Image (cartoon, rainbow, N blue to C red; front, side, top):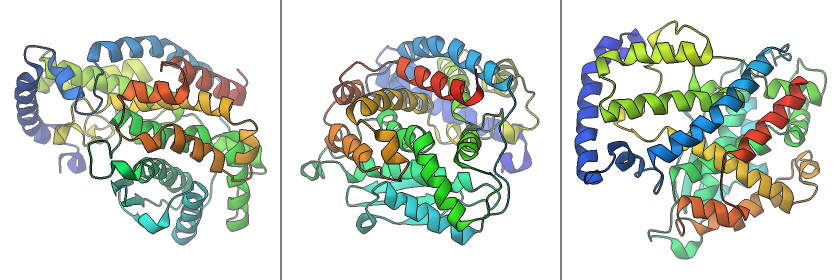
Length: 377
């Protein structure tokens, strides 16, 4: 209701109660330690606010430099037109099949917000359709297929045990992100996707290269869930710093909107035009999910590591993806990560899959190479 009416004051008293309860819970769990770490442990066991903060501090300068360089170049042409709901859903279901989604243990339906839920025996997906924005439906579906694939591919022997689930939200997000971004938005797969869309719709773009540029178009915006790969992690870093300050008592709820708006202006160079585009846009804090936001960027970092290892392990991968053949990519992910479920800690899971310790380097190298080439930097 507060978001619908753009009235922050209606939300703050409830938020204050939620934070007080979560701080009380954290104090019990922390046993004298860091309150935020105790909450973070719910979603990313073994991670600490200090380690994540240090990683974000290393990432931010390179991300900001890349963003500024890209925005200094002309933007590629966007995909325009109307794409009917039925056609988008048919295409999305075909893409789910291309990524190996097991229809005997799941289904795809429409919802206001995309999500996946279930278990190793039944993992269902929702997506959404905006007729003027087909990439919304396409990449929401591919993203959720990544989440579902992790659940569906866990070793059956782990079913109904503590090992029979993903080991953390960050690792779970790595699967959705590598499916959506490194594979789904890559030059190879978008060449295949261009052909599929050209056969089904009237396209405003002349060729696969223009289509690839449109898929990866960088533009600033208020909304985290609509952010491109260059901007997305900057949204997360801002939320991490704000929620950490709230939990630690360094920021009071009454000052949250001003703190958000000031930080957004500093980080993105834009004045927030209304609360629903600012502090009221996410549901996480309203339901007490403090410590959840950094797992999104951890997922991107892990996906960067996995992509580096996957490319080394599968020669000719982009050629396969350009034909819509994801089989070797998804099998590598299944064998090296997904089937192990909760067997190992998050960082160990990534290290064993990749053959090296996870760090932010591969993600930043990937982003700089991809968007540097795309924008002629």
